[in-house]
Length: 306
Length: 301
Image 1 (cartoon, rainbow over the protein chains, first blue to last red):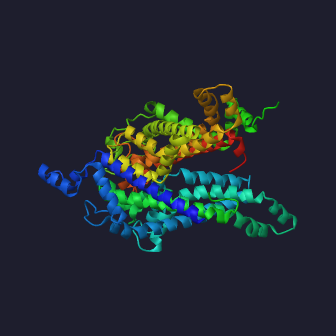
Image 2: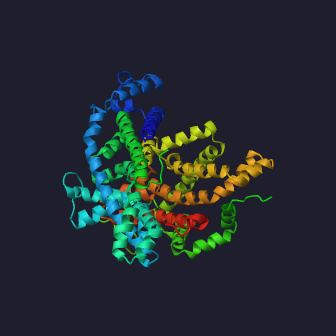
């Protein structure tokens, strides 16, 4: 276990190093010039060159990257080109809002997805089952911005149950979480259904039925705990989907998280922020996957860590 | 002497060979049939758009706005209403189908090609080539795909083809992973060894034996991938960094009209429904194809 963990951590570190190189190279090669963005249209060529030199952007690629990497290793993500503040501070100040949103989304997708999956599995083959599975496909196929705008229109504009946007109370959290969770709810309902059907097929379920246990006891005491664990263990993998989704969801609802930070930075070619958010997302994704892999053998002893 | 034949070779072969069988099996599934109908209707709308509507998609009509300059709700004259510039929404949605389909086919085709090349090469040759390719794939998995796409599309000057390229660059990863696993298990099977013993060269083994076995997987992932692609294009265009107006795309219709959305929700609802319908259709067909083409999955999910 320790050896496995050690190897995985080294692997993860290498992956993050790779992500930093690729992102840095992409941003270096792309045609947008950050210096022009900072200096503005009316700047003289001398000013532009001055800013370029100040930011170290006149150096060759490898020098720039090496400098960035050394700073990164000491926990310094650099300064924003436009806001002039530390990128790490900007990210840390925005992170709680995004984490809250993701927790809300996890709650929504589990509540909706697991319920749909369990009902579908129990009523397997019925019209209810079919309808629920179509519902899960709709969840997977619905563009998040459309879901967000429609929820806003119905529940905020028309019914006035929730605020139109912003951040603060639990009321603000409901619609964005639901929007971010719809996609996952679709996936979880399908996984929950097949996991539950799998468990219901096992020999010990037949034994339980043969013993004459009540249907409710069989389902909730014997089948559900076994079926639900492997599905919940997948939560770590959701991080990747969330990291993209928050850019859209936060911009629809004006949610002050790192998604919005990234989106504003992308529009202004504020490279240190783009780099920072990409690295933080990649970290989260790598950790999420690692978590999912570590949890798996505890839930199903047949899985061995290799 | 008996030669052991692995049982699913035959199964996979019978699953693909009778093409008509696949079609019939698809058409028997109500949901897949529904999906196919939506796809055919969308293709029809894209091709026949100029004949289906009396308006031009970019024509800003004099009678297309209220006296105050607001968009018109759906009426007998403008079936789905008009947008903020007084253009017919139904017409723009019909033309938008072209954008979605072109990107769906081009971007997804390119992603499928990259994914197949990477996955099959890595799975068949292994060694250092395979190692490098799969480590690179792992690396790509650590990128949030949507964030990467947004980043690339925003910083490059967006156009239809740039959007297609960006989507292809972020969407090949899953296919590569799946095909890698399948190819490496195929490459170890007895019938491949037998072929090699009989003197078959690498190209022959790859194109006559490996690829045909992968075809069902490629078809399934190709179909499901169009759905992802359509959603990604819509999202990029909604953010204003995808297909640029005046070219109509379902995503940029919503982008352009967002400011009016509280007063004129149909401007979000109709294009949104179009995106959902097309993405759903490809998902339904892809899922049914997986059932039909892959006998081991039958009855699951």
